[in-house]
Length: 280
Length: 280
Image: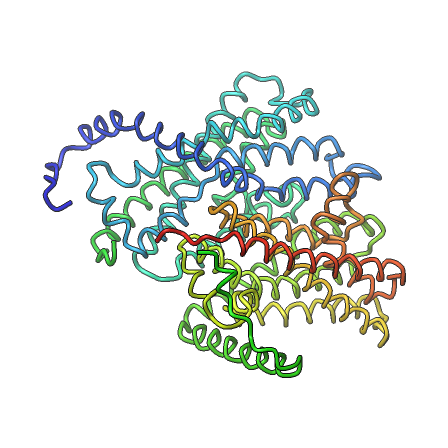
């Protein structure tokens, strides 16, 4: 690789233009990778079975009357929503990144004329169409069962929901880059991420609807970033949010996206300088 | 190369000598794992903390569900805490002793380094199954004891000696089944190489074992009783401790579990015969 000319440092605009040019190719590579490892891909999808288990449990609980204003049907739409949003927005950047940093394969990627964060984004975005295909049966059942409350039949809520999916994807991506980049500095960055995941499971609405949590936990969930990764899009989708509440939440979500984006890039910059590229 | 042919059988000098030989081997493997774990002291503390956090995450849905109902599918809160106790204990066994070793096998198969294991003059299944033990999961063992003590003090009636005996026996059966399922998963890696995420699938399915089997209905009930038998893993041991397990169910579970183990062993031998080493 040493013979390859290092491109001159361009401005941010030129940088973006080059990324835009490379992106379609990167996406194509990503898609064919997903198709090549389709068995593995399906197994990954199947690991997200917790919403279905929780759905079964709440069904048993709500068999003799609704819980709050959740009856059996509301639980079905909620957890199918969780399943769909989770599968559409999740990725595994943190494991990939911390492994590449630790075993040194990142050094080769740093030499490429495209920033590794963009390459990672392309890699994980290209899995989205296949994921959408896999969740389409669940989405169809959701629409059928929960039709009367779906997005409150409101065009604005539909737009907010679509925007919130983008926001959730970006938020998850940036927090994962941030946690992954911590591997530049310490060994057990994956341990930290596991702690993060534990809190996420409770305060994002993944295990139980946030409404069912005690009051203090709910107010914590409202201000922490976790809800905006999962609970908020789901709540908008199944009609739990008014137009006003949804717009406020969307603003907060993109606030968090900006914050974690900046933090991820910042930690990355410091980390790369720190990186001594062992192995390779 | 066909490795099964190269597998050297130990000299047959009677079962007593065989047991002694493998007991010695087990001691060596165990002390190796301990030494490895002790090397990373900071990691040790972080992992212990994570174990405590996951215990809390396990309890939250149970607390929320029993916050709204006195009984769910015939189980009271302290009774299902007994199930959670078994779940925590089994998870300690699974993540501390079973998963780490068998994850390593999948790596070996992928890199072709399983050759070195197969060349050793001992049973390959024994060697790979005892290769790695992670001692910090002892935290989970203590946690599960605490949960048991709390649950039974809430119930106000302690298990009789007979109940305790059947409970421990069913724990043994549960471990055998867990291990057998894992062996089947690992065997799959001989046919489909890229299955390291099967361990995640396994873990995610196992998560459902924190609930008594009676909360599941229909297809899920069948799957969790016969295909991935969480009923035998946690519900029956809990019923044994509570003195609610009848003899017929216990006998059927025992027969089923032992048959399962025998099948797993056969599949492993078949898979091993197919192994042709990766071209590394």
